[in-house]
Image 1: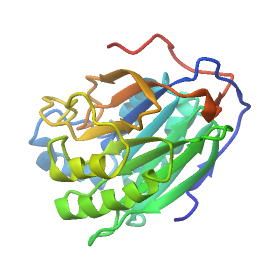
Image 2: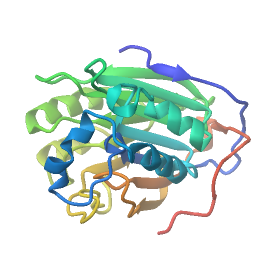
Image 3: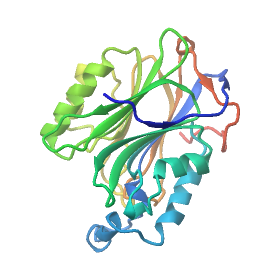
Length: 281
């Protein structure tokens, strides 16, 4: 484990209702796809800059503004293809998030720097970066601890491997971390569905709750598979879950609104951006 890249600022204030909004989004380096053939015809956009990336990244920044904690997968942390823009930094700045953290999963130097990010309006107690096991390196997790109380909240942002055996190993690694904590949120691109064996194994080996139903997030233009998930432990009350039909990536974003026990002792920045209307049921 190693400390992630970080930026911290702004003051904190009370969060009297203990409700927070969490969003998980695989943004595919801010490349919007609307057809399967784009994986072939637009594959060059994963290597080289293109004119529409900046405007799409701006749309993503406006979309994530209403949330309290955002977990992002498959972004670029500053290379040729992103015009050397750290996309996590850009999104935090444009959406008004005072705290942002990144983990570089696969560093190809000037060509590409694949990473994860966590954006937050809440001040974390600590943030750790995890390298996940696998035959092919390049998968990781960010884990942030929130709250001043005796039972802090752990939020983990993950992006798992494509292969089933590698995913099983990675989930076993994460399960060991999860079992040690009372209040946990795990969110990200799992690259597997509720019905898959490794997903069942994670639920059986931890106290994470099984989702009531599968929320289809992939592909974004005609969602058929639930690959993106937000899982919580029993002490966290999920009041809303929503998948948003936005075309900024090849995945759809998924969000939950959670009521956190007072024992966590959350605090939140006094300046909050965006609309605070409840998520749709």
